[in-house]
Structures are given as C-alpha cells and as structure tokens.
Image (cartoon, rainbow, N blue to C red; front, side, top):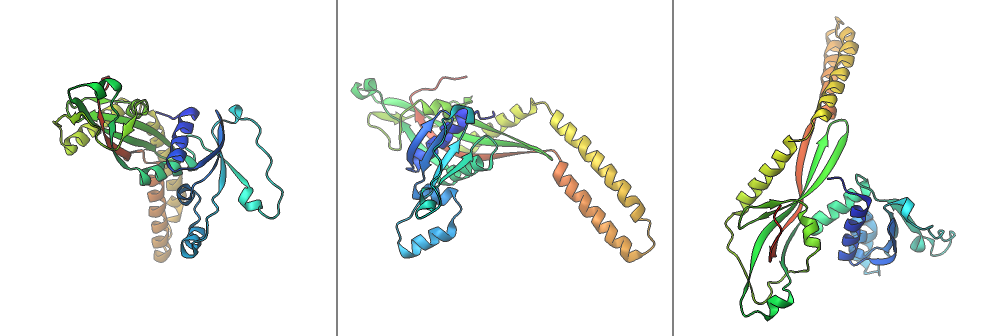
Length: 293
C-alpha cells in the first residue's frame, strides 16, 4: 500500500510520542514539536554535538521542528525570530514529510532500530477481569514488510501482515488492527496463552510465500518498460564505443574496453528491474480474538 498523508502523520506522531517529544502545536496538516534527546540523536545527525554533551554533561538543547504533512490543511506558521542571541535555540526548522521522502525514511529507520521487536499482551476487559475462568489468548506474529520495486525509478509499498501461531491464518492491515487495542508488555492476570502449532521458522516461511504470491499478481509493465529503456541505452553506448574499439593501438583499445564494460555494468545496475523485500519490524501479539479475512 502507499501511505496517505494522514497515515504518514499518524506514524510520525506515534514515533514522537514513543520518544517523549514535546508537542507544541498540531493540525491535520502539520505538527510542531521540540525533540526529545533520543529523537534528536536519531533524526538530526549531530554526532559532534552529542559527543560534546556526553563528554561534558552539559544540558542538551534539542531542536524544534515543524513537520508538514499536507500544506493545504495547516494554518499559517509563526515567523522565525530575528537573528540574535538565542536565535538558533528558538529557530523553527520546517520540513515536509511525505511518503517516499528522505525524512520519512529516516523515521522508519529510527523506529526499526529502536523498536524492531515487541512482545505484547492485550489488556483484559471488564468481563475477563470478573470471570472465574482464565481467558485463552492466541499468539500472533505481526510483521511490517517493505517491498521495493526498483529500476531507474523506485516505488515502495508497506504491508502489515499478521499470522496466527495457532491456526496459520494470515491477515493484512494487522498494524491497523493492533492500534485499536490496548496492550501491555506483561502477561495479565487470569489469562493463558494457547500453545503454538507453528514454529517461528514455519511462520516466517508462510509469510514469505504469501507476499511472494501477492507480488506475482502485480502488473509487470514497469519491469518491461525498464527493460526497453535499458535496451535503448545499451544500443546507444554500443553505437558510441563501436568506432572507438576499431583502434589499432592495443593500449588504447584495452582502456576503451574497460570503459565500455564498466558503462554496461552501470547501466545494468541502474535499469535492471528488481524487487527487494525487507522486514522493518515485527513482534508477538497475544490477543483475545482477531477477525479473520
């Protein structure tokens, strides 16, 4: 799926909340936030500053950002303070965060590094708490996968899949399902977890097979067009080097052959259609029930 501006904003806000950033202002189209030390370290690329803070024990001054998700849905921003004492500390940095942007990818990488694996339990409801019987919980493996379709252009999709470790059922939009539930990292009282029928390896293999089968249903016109562009570029450099390779100077000819081979290798890397599948993060979720698709 391609993330909408609203989904991008929801993801960024979850990250900012999880890293204890101070929210200053929010609208459907933007958020102004003062970064926490953790978020500043992960997002601002200031290793020398943070090295100085760590060495001296100085109180850190984190940066303030306005992350823009949709310009049409945000109010006018306050003007920056005039240059002078304290200008750097109070300056508001503005940056668009849209699907495919460098900054959003940085959020993804920070989330992946800081929360690549979780183990959570759904909080019991009032009925469970008052019951005389232990409630069975089903264990699910949730995985957020990124699929990259790459050639001389690139397109990305994110798929949130969940697989039951008891039944092997697989559902999509698993992350959206989890956002509607209250979770805890500790096993609640009056709850027991059903025995898993799948091993982690088998669950992983089934998810891989599921996503590969899904990709096979996609239109491959993008790859065909990339191959046509590749053939055109190869024909162009073949025409260019054809005359150069007719030289009788062996040393010059050898140099031209190396250039020709390198150029073909570069074009192959640039235009060759390829699909990469990577896991952004994952975790075990122990749940009362999940609606099967």
